[in-house]
Image (cartoon, rainbow, N blue to C red; front, side, top):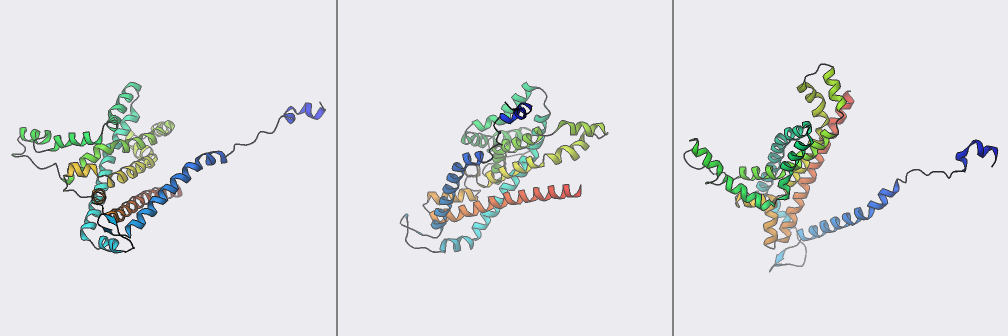
Length: 302
């Protein structure tokens, strides 16, 4: 052993290579490629279907833009689009108003046992079939259901009011079904908060609502936006809830696609599917752009 190697024992060790940053990408690339190819292929098939016509229950040869022209020129179709957007917006706003306080309450629970019970109560409906939950709501919202019976016993109404098979019933059902998808991102954002920030705010003399308004809520807006994106996308694409609680009277884009497929109207279903995809992507882009603009404006102002 030379003097140089004796004075520097690390000289005999092999050089440790840095982290192989390409390995995660190499491992995930097959799944990404397969998923992208399947999605692109399905979109291409839908696009070709949208330029076809149906004759005798089968696709007729040739291509035409008749389905696109009839859809874009239909007043009924734009009414469905507006109702779908209204349903998604109302559901997202109501779930946010209800879900944020619930998520904040879960975050503030210090007892692990109570927190576990709260998680089970909130997320257990996800383990129940959506059809079972919707039929339960039909019993509650029907003319002889719990709500009408309660209002009549309290002498607030003289006869049952129609709640079931209305737009409001669909909103109630979707809020109940999609509420966990709003709570979970907010709870995740709250759990990432540094407790020292709130403690510093309290030490500086801020009251709890000032701390919440200027510290907690601004830092959890990304979780709220993620919940809004999830709920809005799931609400506008729903078809079981509008079908069962709407009773065929609340026609939205998801029902339109389902009915078109059932009637073997593949071109109409393809056109409607592209509109549904466009609305979902536009909503996600809008929420993301608003969040980035707010972050840039906030940090730029600081």
